Image (spheres, rainbow, N blue to C red):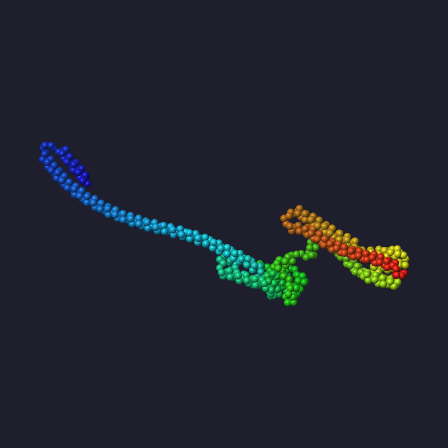
Length: 481
């Protein structure tokens, strides 16, 4: 501020000295100089005062600055202390965060494991609920009452989280099913009979396996339909033996009863299995010649059996009786005894030999051989016919097979292989005729072999007894005829 006052004062003095008059205005100049000095003094005083004020203000400013600096330093120190404290707090919080993060990680791992276990448990419960629901729906017991549970359906359909009450309900339903499935009882209830009418009948329930009914004199098996929850009578009645067994069991007269362990599958297969007559009818026109062969062969076999049984004779006993008479020399008695059994081939042959016993050995042997040859044709009658029928039957079956395959290939040519049912006719002919032909030929061949063996045994027996009679006649001690 001092320098700022000196400059205008100096400028004023120089202006006064440079522009004023030199001589005439000396007084004025002196007055001006005096005024200038006075003004200078005033200005100096004012400058000093201002300088003093400025110094005071500067001192005050310095004091204020010092005070502010001290306050700022104190504030900075406080802030540094707060910063250090906050840094410690932050460090502690960071450590706590790390600890909590590790704890959270462990808890998340446990939660994931627990959640997986819960999900697996819930999945198992829902699977078991579906299985139990299917078991209840397909159970015979469902036809007599509602065993389904709403909670079971909710669990199976994932509409409800299973709790302990639902699990207890599943357990109770399963226990009830197990109890009912092992019970045998007789009750009355509605069924659908074979005519399709809803009637009430006496029902025998064998656990969850089989159900039978008795409707008047009709006894049969029942099939359960889960869709309608009804019991349907099978279209085909069981055999008479099975009907009697069921009837006796229901009346308490027997402890045995027919049981289908397949829970209706075997009974359903029984109704779908065609009868023998239905299979025969599906074999085509060649079935009838094969059946005719069977009928003719049956008649021939029956005739041969009757013939062999009617002409059967105890050869050993007959020859013992003849030998006893020959020991006594009673050949006439031997002849009469054989003529009394004229209906038997052996007696006729021996009678023919005794008729020639008066001749020589050769004559007697020839007579016996002639009688044996006379008896052979009746014994062997129809055996060749049986052999011929046994040979024709499989040939007819083979012919039916060829015919059926031709029809099948014709259908394939016309319509392709898209629908197997269109080929079933030809296949039925091919298989049924072969089966029927072999089924007829095999027993005919077996019976033909047995009959041929029996006839051979009879002929061998005739020859053996004929030789024995010759030896008996010409041995010593038996006398003459």
